[in-house]
Length: 519
Image 1 (cartoon, helix red, strand yellow):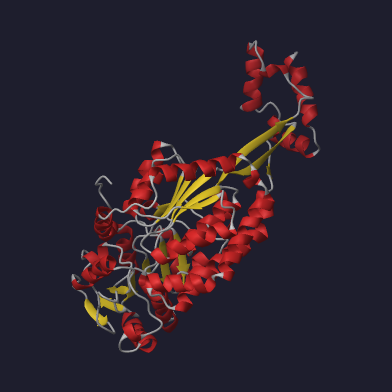
Image 2 (tube, helix red, strand yellow):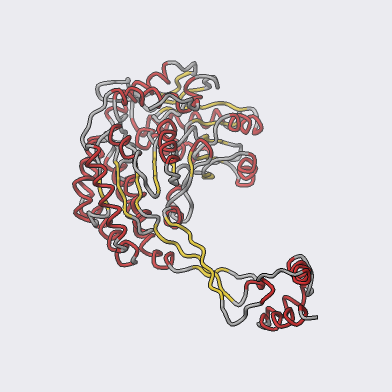
């Protein structure tokens, strides 16, 4: 991959990605990848994926796969990420089932043509919007939620009637292999194909022409995906991340805020694109919040979190080394850190850092680990200024009165916002999930995903029983004047137009215009 300038928040991922790219291994050849692409294209041309029955069957198959193999899924995730079984079940099994159930409940309605108004001057006629599948979708999934973020995109792509090539993350090899084994048993194997492997496979896939690409991961790779997509003018959805801030204001319920911030931060050992990246805490409540958080870390994980069944691990040694470097290079004070970092077990303790400098690496790069910097702030204005000084984040969390939260929302920008909680906003399938600026392009979940993978097609039906000659050559001065009055007008007063439209007087207007043109 050619060297490109990256955002400050992406620097750590850029270093890790460069090391990964140096160790290329090949599982699928270019020919095998091209054949898989051709198979999917041929399947889509049959037209069978467009029917409601086919889409419903695929979603039901995915649901059955999740239910029947939930233990295997959890075991694979535990093997890859060291995640507690409860977190594996909630994050990668039930979340997908919930999304499927919501989609099945509404899919038939989403597929129906949508009638839209037709301007009076375009009548007699009617207008509608139909949503049709784009074709063959490429999905490149990440490692942090390797099943969830593979299947969530697949749910949307299949609901919209597309074929899909799924490239799971090679960094989570157990779940990568499990998906490749299970999916052909539960969904149409000619419409969904899994290609395993690493950077060489991804590079080969991106050389081909797709009808849509979904990439979830970091901005460094996202740029390579966007450049490849641009060669074919392929639409893309990029779900990235960034430094998602948490703001704690006077009037917040501090005991609840402390629990919810830490729960969002330490789930999956902090390896969540929407995890609270750092906390900006008003000086009036900072001491109380810190005390609450210190007590919670001890009560949740004990004196050594490595012995806790409720705390996960970093995905691999390279990311472990990246997070360790962020902690050790920080000039912030370590408030809490139960346990000792261990590279062999990829353990980083849940860590609270107090007041690191804003130009330190940990305040510039996305952390993606179990470390929460806590900054004491004098005012809301200072909080807003610090947030706006960085790239637009994928998520923002605000704890405090809703009126105060609304003021901060109005002065900032982010992919999504959750007030008085963390992470929970992405669990509502009626809310779009996506970033803005450096945190992503496009959105999905629920109908938003159905629309993202659909071509929204405009259709107008015109009647032929009324056909005014003034629209056709030869053009005359009288026709031009009549069109000027008709379009810029008013030839007929707005009140009269509304009255005529209300009683179905379109034909009368047409006759009147025709009569006037003969004067």
